[in-house]
Length: 335
Image (tube, rainbow, N blue to C red):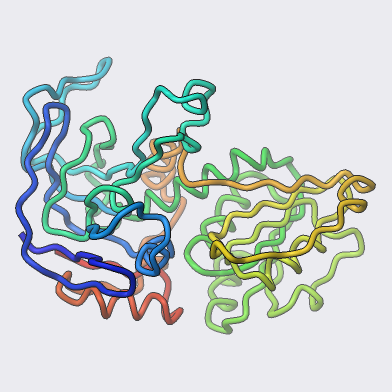
């Protein structure tokens, strides 16, 4: 089969590799589409993946083409069969370490991810645990279902926030993840959702999706008491520093965007104490993938808004370049 392979830092190419075969509890998925994410850029830069080479791609969906001999149904659900359309949760946990045993599987000491630590969906085929697959309803296009994975990260973010009804929310960044956080904030009863974004086209898109106020700087939309909830969806040091200073008394700051390892900001410990400010983070997916699939099936997002570029797998390097340039929103490759 053909697959995109990151051979070493800053080097990716599409080459022929062996077709995957399913383990006893696995299925092989014929990939319909694979989304590109900021995590893929980090892997290309030599971060996250413990070893190279790696086939990237953790946002993907497709059709089951082979089923392992030990795949069975779970509860009332029948076993997966060839020809079924699925989206795949890329999370791989050991289920044995301290963090898995206390319910924080996403902090697993042996954490792995399809497309991060094992071969991913930027390929014609990929072998995955059957238990990680979610069947797709008839009205969902297989290619569109790649959006379920980033949406599941956003759902996890709101699990961490425990948002209160009537909160005023400030989001930094109107890329795919920032706009997903905007959509969920509206669903969770925010009194208002303001967005800070440097890109004029993305500001316009955020406004069209219902943002209360949109600006290039929080100074333009400052609230006298700050915001009860501030979310960084950029990973950018300047945005993070500014956001930490915009949280109102008793408010919460969520680090949702993925920053480079070397990123550093300054906090004011006395203000955190004196104003009872909570600073927290949200890492990947935790018991949120199937809920995201339900929300997606219910129409929480319009795929036509979020998926702006579809390129053939052969053009994976060009797709990475387009994504990293900030053009459009979600870029996909189609094997």
